[in-house]
Length: 146
Image (cartoon, rainbow, N blue to C red):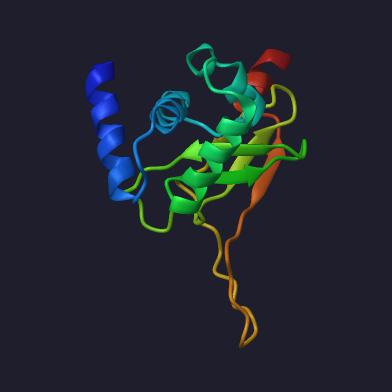
């Protein structure tokens, strides 16, 4: 699929989620899609494709994408928020899988094959979200130590 087709798909998805397909939203979704893993605001801001988008616009864009349910965010052990575009056809996403954070290289990834446990809360409570972060050394960094 070429870049033009990807952008058209992103535009259609944004509309499906009730969002106007602005240039910033399209570009952020494209960068997140190509990253394929959760990335921090700083990593997004440093991406050459997003150089035209100022920091405040990037924050607002990410917040709109999260509120619409197109992107999920996870708090890393480094106290930074990481953002990830999720597959819209996956049930339970964004809150139904844990994430792994590598203490060596700082990369975070979705553990899509794993599911979070069901947590029963007391009557009258309303759950807004859940997350589980597993951290350690990824296989790539582990191989570098060998």
